[in-house]
Image (cartoon, rainbow, N blue to C red; front, side):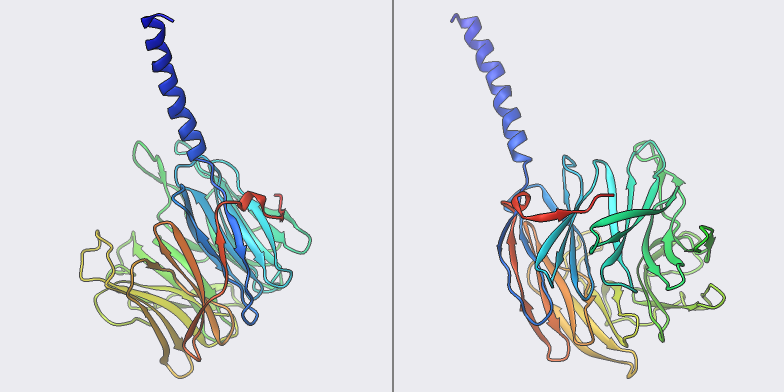
Length: 377
């Protein structure tokens, strides 16, 4: 081989090696190490081992644990892994490329959840499809489609669905459409959809409807600027839902939080409460640094008793890592997650005895090798 041939070989060989490195570097898998059962609750610890795998939302109800996993560089679609604590088995809900996805567990049946998925195309509006999925039957059926993204579904025995949604607004060159005007909507069994509010909130989520204590929400920002909602008055907000008239009563509810905690916090919200409970879990973060730095001096989970009006448990996390919002499991236990760079650890906290327990650990080496069912939609 001549000098010219050797140079060509080195040149193209170098690019081939780089290509192979990128391909193998993007292969992301996970491994189940062990399972432990503590009481009736299971949790999961994912270790990322330097991959591009990142954690999204965490969902839970009395029986199931669900974790959304996404590829930070967008090579693989999002997936949601659901663990059944009774059968000790896994179910995988695999997304589609360039699609967003999220779930809301039913209040009426622990085996039912609502899946919201939409194709994300920067140059086009997002078309959202909402499915009702049954973990016992292992399938999903389309409920309806909507032009705008929708989430936080709350179902009623008569077939109504309460949810939040936002119409598109004009954005910049890279993102022509943005969604920053969130409001409440109600879908009736005949398919008609009614807009219940005209708040145009920058963020609206963590929606919890109770039987006796109203509608608890997490809000941030208001495009109308009628209130300094969430931004200057961070906390848990409460609205009233008139079930007979299908109305949400605002009044002065957004002028100040229903519950807040301490001073100097960046955010204090993300509420969680069971429909017939009076124990409200939420979180608060405080920092001496700027909002841009996002370096928290402390992060706390608070459990508030709505009947006594007192905080009955405060768990403060002051180590490295980020503390998630709590998810209420029953009238004694909640779940929370701590993430730090390449891992996420899920804990059970008994807010009566004020004790934390790590339940289960899972690695990322062989997640594709898990024996699991898949739900199609």
